[in-house]
Image 1 (cartoon, rainbow, N blue to C red):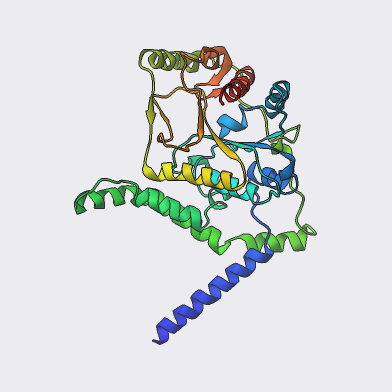
Image 2 (cartoon, helix red, strand yellow):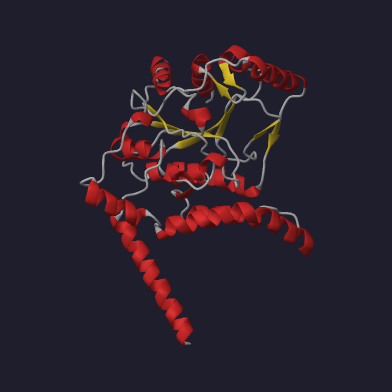
Length: 340
C-alpha cells in the first residue's frame, strides 16, 4: 500500500508539474507550422478559403492566382495556403482545428489534399519538434485505432498477434512523442532560457508565410528534371498511360479521419473540397462514395490533364514546378466553377 501511495503521489506531482509548464512555457517553434499558425492567430477572419496539405499544396497552389481568377468569375474570395511540407493525417487535422478555432466568422471552403493516415514517420521528422507538437490525446487515439483496430476482417489470434507486432515499432514512436508532448518535456528549459538570456520570447519570423503573407512559397528545388530523374519520370508516366491508376480506399480509420475533417469544416460554416494533385502513382487515396460526401477534384490522370504531367512542368515525379503550379491552380478554379 505504501508503494502504491508513493506511486500515485509521484504521478499526481508529475501531472501538476507538466500542467504548470504547459501554462507558462512558450509553445514549441516548428518550422513552417508556427509562422502560419501565428500569422493566422490574428488574421484568420481575413481569409475565406484555406488550402490544407503537404508540399503538393504548399508549393503548388498559388493563392494570388486563385483569388484573381475567382474574382474574374464574379466570386471574389481571399485564400490562404495552409500547406506544410510532408504534412499528412492526422497532423493536418490538428492544424485545421488550431486555425478554425481562432475564427469568429464562417469559413467558405477548405481544400484538403486527399491523403490516407500515415503511421510511419518521415526520417527527417524523427526526434524533432515537428514530430512532437501535434501528438495530443485526440491524435493519439486516432493513431492507436490505425495501428491496432484498422482491420475490419476477423482474424485468429496468431494473425492478430503478428499484425500487432508489425505495427508496434511505428506506434511506439508515436507513444514516445505523445508522452513528450503531454509532459511538455524540454519546454521548461526553453522558457527559462528565454527569460534569463533573451529578455522574453523572441518574435516569430514570417519567412515561411511567403512574401505576400498568403502562405505560399515556391519550392527551392530545381525547376527541371535532368538525366536519370527525367528518364525515370517518363517511364512512370508511360506506365500510367498504359495502365491507368485506380482508386484506393485504404483503411477505415483513414476514411473516418476524412469524415472528421468534414465535420470540423462544416461546424465552422464551410464546405470541404478534396484535392488529388498530379503526381505519378499506381493508385490514389479516395473517399468512399457516400451521400453528403465532399466534392472531389481529381487531377491524377495524365490522359485528362496532360499539361499537369508534362515533364517540362515537373521538378520531380511528385511535384510540379512554378509553371506547373500555375496550370494546377487554374485547373482547380476551372473544376470548382464547373461544379453546381
